[in-house]
Length: 279
Image 1 (cartoon, one colour):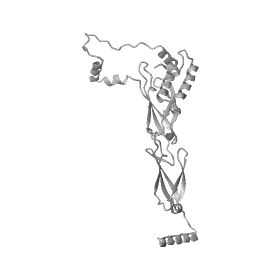
Image 2 (cartoon, one colour):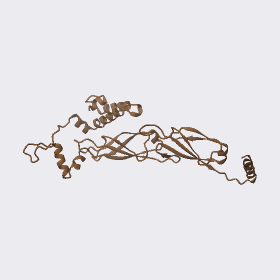
Image 3 (spheres, helix red, strand yellow):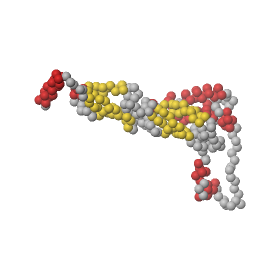
Image 4 (cartoon, helix red, strand yellow):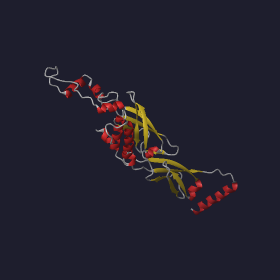
């Protein structure tokens, strides 16, 4: 992969030119702006290498690769190839250790999102310290629909302690703040509204504000019973894979006013008797 071509700069580009090219290319390919996610990753990878003087020097002057082992017909293992050799090591319990060191270690960090941001997704600048001692920072895109406790993994942003091995991965544990009104169930949202008992008898409408600040009007027909649940399609959380939103479920409960005025109580009693007579 030619990092200079990816950023569109010459090999003798200055640090300022590298930063300027990165800003331009990252905006061009950012997924939130309609760009290609794979190209965006390549741009980030190129920038992370070329902005670091040591990494850039290693990239510009790669060291020759040497075989770790050589074999001849006189060795005590006969004509075993590399796979046979690893199998032999595995028999003595060394196989897992060999596999573990084929890549640098993974790194795990946390990111906090608000309840609303879990709907829309968010691009965050994450900063963390690698086991190698180097500080790392890059733009991490958390997809819409993510829920509390989900993990997002970014390949190649983990440890780089062992220079001749690929970098480990970065895994972000996403924490989503709770909302005082809405409860999430998969891609659906639930909320309870308390309405005056007389409004349930007469019928009314209520205004609902979604977590993304959209205002919806819900009609409550006359005679609605307490405990009734209404559904509103397409205004829940977008599915993290399909992007299709779930539903809102609105449960209606009744509030009963405390009436001490005897004349009002007598009127209510008359209305009740009239209703019983008519039915």
